[in-house]
Length: 191
Image (cartoon, rainbow, N blue to C red; front, side):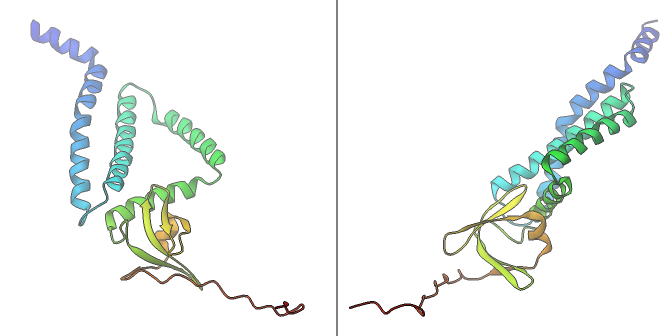
């Protein structure tokens, strides 16, 4: 009799049971994704970059788990997709270019896993006839911060950093010399 009443209880409360199982499995899935991320990393990694990548993966995993729990509670994904796409469209309009945001985040993950350029490296980014040289100061979610040998700082988007040829320099480049201005027109200065 107790077994039948237990089965009836499980049958009526399966949504709650699935929610509890999802909440209990979330930390285990976080550990698993953290281990997979550690395996994907080659060599030493800046701790700040590692923290940002872990945070991004936690957000993605939490979103997926939330969607699964909502499906078990009977909320259709079509409704969620409409709501999500509406919010995403408003966010895209508000931030002007959603594709740029997503491509910069994806490029950050690619740079994190690839790990060929690190903080402290001197690089030259070649963009056609132009080139930008600098030491990598920070590799953020959206951009790479370079410090030119003259002290100027350049903020370079991640998606361009991944798609342009990047030369990793062995030595620090020499500072640029300011051109000497000659007086061509006008009277000669009096001595």
